[in-house]
Length: 76
Image (cartoon, rainbow, N blue to C red; front, side):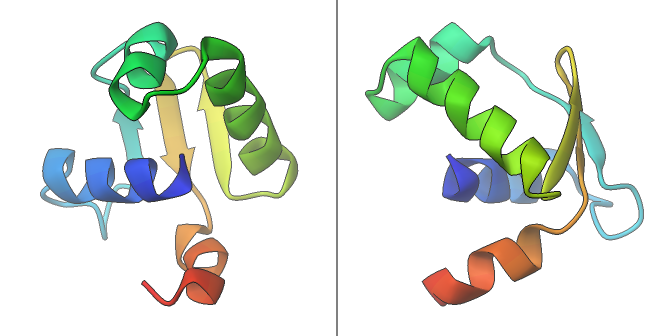
């Protein structure tokens, strides 16, 4: 889910370095279908990223707070 959000920000947000906010272009059900996981898994992943301080989520609006540090162990 984290890599999906990272790739999504690269594609959707031309000025991502300035404005780290965007609106999800699809529902959580659609994201789950795209990723081949259950809807509940997407919900849990988003909640976990919020608890860890990686994102702030309000409805379909997401603000990326600290994705680079979250991705660093993945060497991306």
